[in-house]
Length: 141
Image (cartoon, rainbow, N blue to C red; front, side):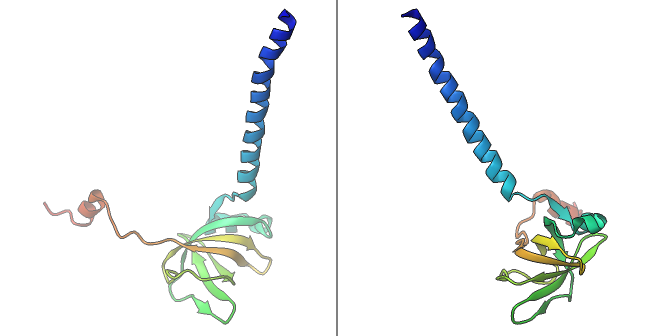
């Protein structure tokens, strides 16, 4: 009877470890398949031809005066501190999308040097500023 008790006492910890590993693997697999590393425009352009056709997420700002709308496509220039690229997007345009707004783009950079975005998120400008930001803007005592 000692052998049966020992065998039974190992069964639950082993089954529990297998279940935890299986759940961990499923979580890892689902997040790695949907995640994309965020690049700046300059970082994407620095990759050169290697970046073409790869799905990436890009953080940028909409260049002033670059927005062109047609019946099915939105075109604009995305910029950061040192780089710029043309963007084409054919989905629903966010209400807050406009010149100089920060955007998050997901898609691929084509051989034609145009970023084909299938996701366009416009970051909402903050309506609040911290006390430290307010003091920096107005240093008077």
